[in-house]
Length: 560
Image 1: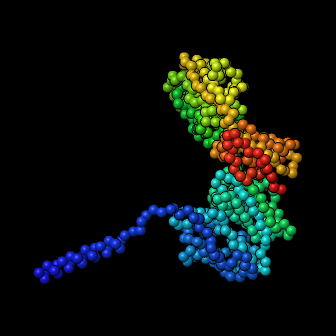
Image 2: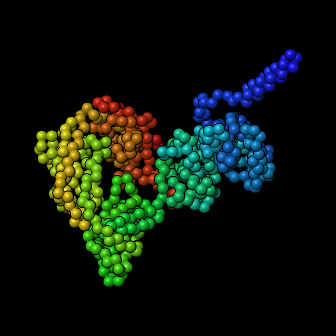
Image 3: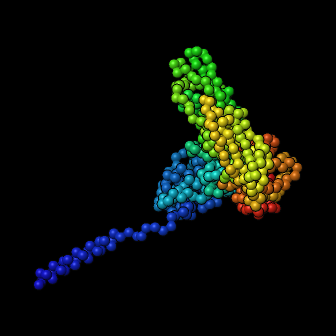
């Protein structure tokens, strides 16, 4: 009996120990909200605004643990402190130490922690750049330049400021005297500036080398100068649009015959279609010294850098053949004057007739009565003059409609109806007997498609005035927030009132620019030579334009 009791006690002890061990290894329940709170700086040494600073280190304390590498890459000191700098961590506090004698006397320093800083847990970026100001003299320079970068994803864009009196203001080889970084909202601020003229640029610094790399980095130039004076030490509204300099000529990366009558081209970038025709290309047979023309060029929708050439002549597969391209341009105006590409002849016959692959509009398949543009995309290039004779349009009462048609390329027709009634149906007939491809294929059938026009109650509008001290023309854009293809434009000359009627409902951005050179398009300025952009102004709110509820009394006021 005693042995049984002792055995029972041992068993109970083992069970209890097992239970305790199991409890000790229990984890807290998973789940809960994802951390979306950005890290921030909650303390510094020295305190912001310190004067007569003579220490050999500065400290930043963060609200949470952050990725150390991201912090080191996001520290910008203006003006630069010469010599080696050591970065040491103690928990959430970073200490940056340097040699005492490396600080300049009577100088205001700004140390910016940029928005590239991320927290450890979920990679949240700092919402905005933080700047610590201190001076080795008796005062802090009070100059501040602030503004906004208007870009789809502004977070991380750098702001470079060059002090013109120093004479080193070439962004290609000179690093900036002052640096800041843009937050999620596009806002920035550079402070601690002494009286001087400043050259300001925005740079999406791809290589993080604090230099502007043409063609690699997107850039922005403001529309006004930034001059800090004793009387005017706060310069606001230094705003930017971002662009990219393209100085590289287009190149043909691949040229492949897909059958006896087609060549597929892969280019390094999209071409300027307004300067492109089939006559920019031809075949050259080096054995017979014979040239063969190209009949058509075309491209597919949403394939911006892919093109097709179509031709009726047959190439001799025994000879050496080359595709020659001459004087083709990209959208920035860069020219490829001449290129020769060897072609492997493909003798596969083209026996497929042309089809209508898509009939579409910019309004989800609906016809807008106020521009009435319909696009027809074909499966292959066609003779446009013949194809025009094969297109007819009828209303719901079978009355033939008048229209204009042009071909942006040989496989795309742009049809503009001359008169459209709201809430009506329009039938499009394409007699494919007239749609002959380069190989001579046709199809003995007619393609029909019916589209509906939008009704009067489907539209909204916006009207107001632009307040600007200028006699130059002003271009006003009303642009759909979620579809950049839908944009309404008005040019204002003397009368600065605008009115957009028959607007498709949705959320819209309203902005305008002063067309200084009267060319009708916005000019972004240049980094070198430093050229200011054209002045622009955004309306502060997104316009929610609802059907039958136009918005009026909009005041778009330009800053000076």
